[in-house]
Image (cartoon, rainbow over all chains, first blue to last red; front, top):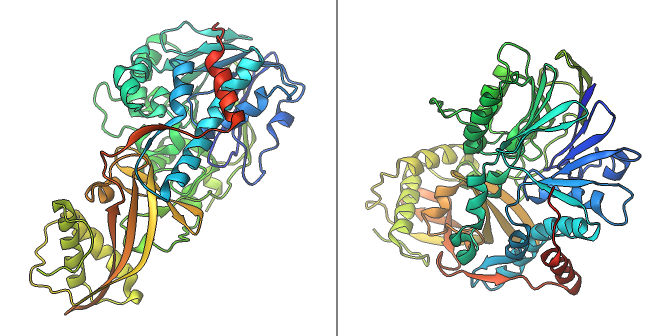
Amino acid sequence: MLKFDFYESGHGETTIITFPDNGIGIIDAYPSQSNSRPDILKLIENKIIHFICLTHPHDDHAKDLATITNPSADACVPVLWHTITDIHQWAYYSTEFNAFPAGSMQNAIKRIRKETAMTTIKLFENIAHRNINTHKLRNDLVAKNIAGVEIYCLSPTEKVQQKFISKEVRSKNRFPDPNKLSAILAFHYGKTVFIHGGDALKSNWFDAAEKFFSLHIPNATIIKIPHHGSANSFSFKKTKHQHNYLDLCDANKAIKSILFAGDSTHPNEAVYQELLKNSTVYCTANGLKTADSDPLNIGFSIPGCQYISNSNICNPMISFECDQLGNINVISGHDCSACS
Amino acid sequence: MIIETNSITTSSEITINDSNLKFQALTSVTQATTSTMVNDYTAEFDKNKVNASRHTVKKRKVLRRLRGFIYEMDSNNVTVIFIDKDKEYRYSFAKRILIQNGISEKNQPFEMDEVEIEDENGLAIMTEFRPMADAKSSNVTPFNMSASEQKSLNTVLKHNYAEI
């Protein structure tokens, strides 16, 4: 059996995959602000870890991977999968920021930027301290096999990764959007295919689709929706090459989609409607189901303005168990049809 | 057109103010008519075809001033952080609202004034955005790191990561 556990993680994400040999893989990890997700070290206690994976270097995906790899933690981590082109360069540049002559605002900007940067640095510091191996994901690498499950990396391409070490980045400290580095992983187990979309953006899916179709594996029946269901990760304009992630899913079967929409601005309403039309949606949290608030009382005067707060929790945990015949057993969680 | 304003006078700013003035003309204004105001304002903001020359601003009063900066941007939207009484508030709205006012760069700080304007049609409350620093005035600057943070960074920079 192959098991997928998705945990409510505030505005971040936590996915734990249990392989047929009972070993686990952890893809991104972030604590729940409401404590609906147990402590990450409790979740992985006494488990054999095959890998941990940072889909892209954003703190809402990295924070609890740093907890797992902390030298004081008991977890034995053999390898970190990641997509960062050059770890040294990334670390160096993430401790710099574009500073404006802004007087009193400067300190606040610096503090907020530093907090975000230090999460990823802390993770890689732990990896260094414990001499944990790393594996750089790229879509032209061969599949990995863990306990009979083939794992394919569909994105990013090497071309995308190279943009992060371009001359422009070096001279101006201007990285492209790190979401573009997001890994898209496909797990193939008999007739079951699960796609983890990380926070991949529209253009990543064009590359991912090309790779996926070349693999000749069944279309996915479970998908972790990328980037919290935002509009910039879903292509509505479909030309021959402009695939979106639903094109990689099996249109004839009941697709199960998992949505981490942990703040009040996610998911995008139009994307969510597409998901409801084409799949059975399971949300850990959903901002569309959260009452609007506006602590500064400015929303009325700025068109389309929304305060970003935590979403109400829909499912503290969503859990599926799958066999090689493609059967999916929902162990925990309810879909959106259960909500009014 | 008479505009009593201490805001910047780029052409884009004037365009925004013009549309604000049109917005006044469209609505007989009190705070209680908020929902109507928003709708009309949005429509006029989008059309951006405004002739406000026949309206005269009699009084302009800044009710509140907030400061914030651009945290994140995607193709359409911007996430900003307002700092008010040492607390952070994250908001998201259309990127063009800031760009039209010369606020276009990540980390660029800005002020947002809530302004009460009175003309012959009554009172209107609107917002004005103003950059606190020019979009091109940024410099790449390192964080001031504590000793432990610097140690963390040094560990990462010196380590030879084994790739498998």
